[in-house]
Amino acid sequence: MDERQFAALRQEVAAYVAGPAQRWAKEIEQSGSVPRAVWTDLAERGFLRLTAPRAYGGLGLPFAQYLELLERFSQMHGSLRVIVHVMNGIWRSIDHLATPEQRDRFVKPLVAGQLIATFTLTEPHSGSGSDIKTSARREGDAYVIDGEKWMIIFSDVADYFLLFCRLAGTEGGEGTLALMVPRDAPGLEIRPMAPAMGVRGTQHAHLVLRGCRVPVANRLGDEGDGLTVAFTGFLDPSRTAVGMTCVGLAQRAFDLAVAHAKRRVTFGQPLAKRQIIQAYLAEMATDIEAARQLCLYAAREFDAGRPITHLAAMAKLQGTEMLQRVTDKALQIHGGNGYFKSSEIERIYRDARMQRFEEGTSEIQKMVIARHALQRPQRPVP
Image 1: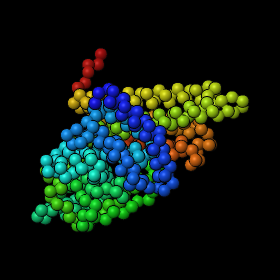
Image 2: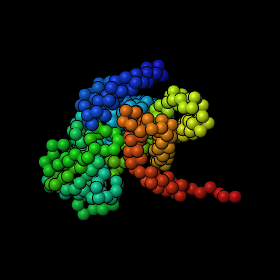
Image 3: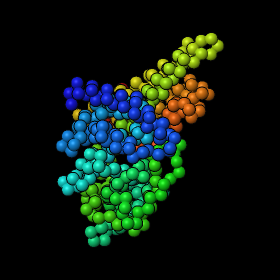
Image 4: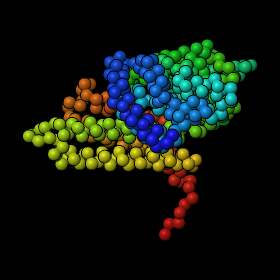
């Protein structure tokens, strides 16, 4: 996509965020659910296939260009942002070890908006990774799965759950499986969870699998490749993307805070005239720009084919921690008015907190960054 085409796409995204997305946001907040029409709308506009290769029907945007658009998308309602973010990334995980037949069954329909899939890793009694407890045993041409998953998004609309489990009797990184589990698989029960504090409408579920049968043909890669499917080609760009979603939401909070500071008058002058408010705004602007540039740097390294595991963790850590600081100051600038549900900043404040959990907590990011620092060749210390 040349610069002229990309500029037109950028304007199209900006117009959508300022117009239709605002109307969807009001409906979602009032109803507590995301209408299926939202998915259709986003798919028909091409917003769910921005990163996929042109050979699959996608737009084939470089990751750095996609992040520029994602920053703007992230100024929408949290549930809309999650849809754009997940659907522009999950195809990588499925595609990584897919057979040609699986690409035709899963990846291309996913890119076309004909299927919805959701990442299904987190469990109620384990961490997210090699600590997987959900197990499977092979019976002929099927796997029989027993276990539980929870906090699984899009549970109300997903056609497939990209589910990670392990062969019974294995542990650690060995024996892990990646399976495309259809929502009507026998033995799968989808239990809706209580509404979350923020990101209303992104229906989370507790999945209970008791003798759930899934065809072996739905396995991605070989037995033992589960965590490879989960993390290779998906986790690093997704963590970087989460960092940029924090930049976008923080920018929206900042813009609202600036507008309020100019408009709100106390003791005969606008808040914007007060030195403490100016200090807050200066700190917020600097925080946002630092996170933005770190995300874009990681994206350019990814586009160049270089490893970005530590940079992705930095981008995610910096983005989520920055977002908390910025939204807190933005709400403080709004004062008591911002605390009521009639205020957009109230919703942003609630939505922002979830992003510290996405793609690994801040504590996990620190472990990744520290491991990189300790394993890299040490420079001579004078």
